[in-house]
Image 1: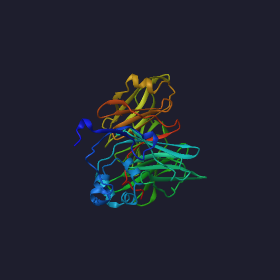
Image 2 (image 1 turned 90 degrees about the vertical axis):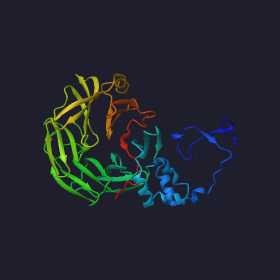
Image 3 (image 1 turned 120 degrees about the vertical axis):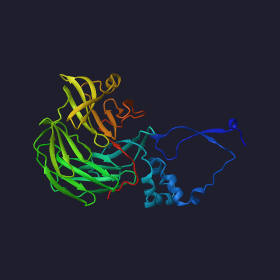
Image 4 (image 1 turned 90 degrees about the horizontal axis):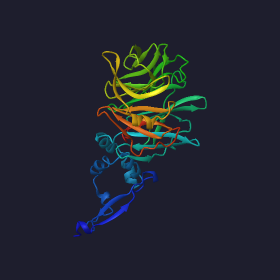
Length: 383
């Protein structure tokens, strides 16, 4: 046998990865151990399912081209059952943009700290606006001529379908939520995107494959079009009356929550956490002069915002150098992500650990990218 000091070390590239994900690995080669080329063909299917279900989803996505058997396995219900029982790969950032009207999509894996390019050429040309992602599904909307349309897709399985038209089919503010337990999803449509028309709230249920019409949101002056969904409730910020508008999906009714915003708040984003946690992220300043970025949590019992953390000055200066710097903020469980297009950076805050950190290797692809958290799952069904 070859001693450890005499073992060969070679450098190789992961097979099938895009140039942007290539990395150099050191691999120890044991000259006295050989693996037969047909060993994978001899593995029982249940054992192969167990192995593949634990491979990172983006690697599996590229394994489809190995052979016809593997391509069919990845669409098999038995494999999807194994895959659904395996813990999630972990959160990713999905960036979507159009280059010369060609849809482009890259996904940054936070656990692997690597970019992966996913082909989005399967989408119709009208799918332009990224609505959001939940439970492995991604939702888009757009105008096909003068007709407003929405679709859901699973980027890993490259499947998609257009949803039925709403009863009041106009450009709307939308949010999607997935229930993995009963393998269904809902879409909630509130006011029109310009906020100048009073339209009934509509809810799409994938089980019924139809939209239902509910209460019109009371006349309010919205602070932002950003919405947050947690604990079966949808929240929006309002200036008049001051506070939040909450939509209960179980009753189909709106109600006002008089939670006053923190003083000197210049702008704010609502971010949903796990269970009933609702966060407010915003910049504090006087006369449009930025002073800090802070995070609050809604105390539901006292109906008030309680400060959780402040962005450390070094991150604040690096992310937002100018008072007019455009930034986005969105959440996944109890993680909050900040992005700045001018700086091309991503910053992550772990609410539970109270830790701030740059997203290593995350350089945003395009100044006009649309970004959201994304959980890659093969078992997420579009039906």
